[in-house]
Length: 340
Length: 291
Image (cartoon, rainbow over the protein chains, first blue to last red):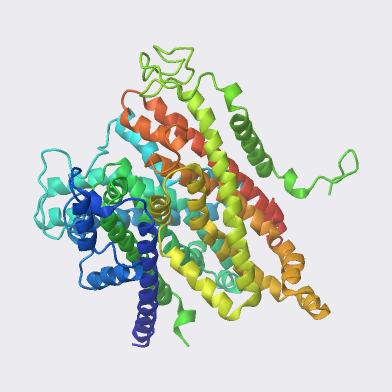
């Protein structure tokens, strides 16, 4: 009961601080994009429009008002769930983001799982071989791995498994011929709900390479933090105490070492997962994966301001949500913070 | 510590194998960048439309004129790779120095004065961190427009928080030291206390962070030029080469491997240098961890 109350308190506090952050971020986004030397009014009209028509459009779009008023109008619309209409796609930005966000969330969540598995396994292995020659080698390897960002991993895996060996698909979400079931918008979930196992498996195949690329790129930093937190934890008396009690090394590692070492790793994961969400952008472009990253880059190439603002804000919300979730997890797992 | 033949001790950090590896790699890249016009076999922008997508010289159909083959416009891959080092290193050095200056300034001010100053700077950093770095730099590039100077500016504006966050906690530790209080008692001004007493203590961490930041800057530049938001198309950059090769991945996979390797090589150089510096300069690391 007490724990739920503490977590609820944290959630309320974090959500309350998130609101001013989002307001400032939206103002920042609005200002940066208003410096842009393009005229949204001229862009939404056919190229043969007259000067008068452009001027009329500017007034209609509110571009002649002072900046703070424009921001006020935009913010007011935002609260009513309207972030404008795409100039290029001629569609509501909300529906564009709504149709691409689930794909990006699926990608990010599975990639986080991959990163967690690799990070934990690698960290335990690094710790296990401490003080041996293998450690020096592994340490070097982890620096090598740190030097390959997700963007290069994507291309690298694509070359090996997609082009040289041709064992895995690397464009889009489904092979041609598969129909896309639409229930929730989350492809993996939808294909399971509708019972289309072959569609599910095909979609899963398409996700292997992008998720591996993101997961592998993220894992070395997790490995290194887990290893050094395990080393720290093993300096403490309770490990020696457990040894004197005759517990097996395995039990000590899992029940005593890992339980304490996981906390610093978890708090790093919060930051890293936020970065991972941004990293999906590049991976999506490389694998032609129809998520928010592709939408964002399309928008940037067409100077489509409403989408850039909407998508930028969505990324920001995602990072804040991830950091709040990780902080709550931290609180659940850390008894020192719980008992006050 | 071993004495050098001439009697001057070799600094500990220079004896680290990691630091040496990193410095050698950076030296090779710097030579490529500085002497690019003399090293490159061809003009990086010269299009040979009669020989597009030729394979490297050791493969069937390779042409000795283009040692690493040509891209989709018949431009020499090796020459573009060598000239690409110019953009990469320029961005690496200028952007990391810029980010370091801004980040270190705010970190020292926040950590030294504490109180509301610290609070305000902390909140600013928090706002910055609520943006994924890739997204923020892309948005900044949209606002600023393409070009080398703007790439550097965008990276500085995104990455100064990396320095600020880490250095701030270091400053807070150092501020409590006796010699800092002593300096304040003697009547040193705040500025003088920070620069004379605290900065020397944060310098090792600062140098390490800078080395790592150079690697980050190279990656960010590659990402931006990959999506066409970095330098213009007339300047060769590694990210652009990747974007071009991505279109012809089946015909010329090697065109993709070459710039990937170049980026990896450069980033690895800065990372291993940073790791070596961290091990030798960080006073809090134990002797065992250093070996």
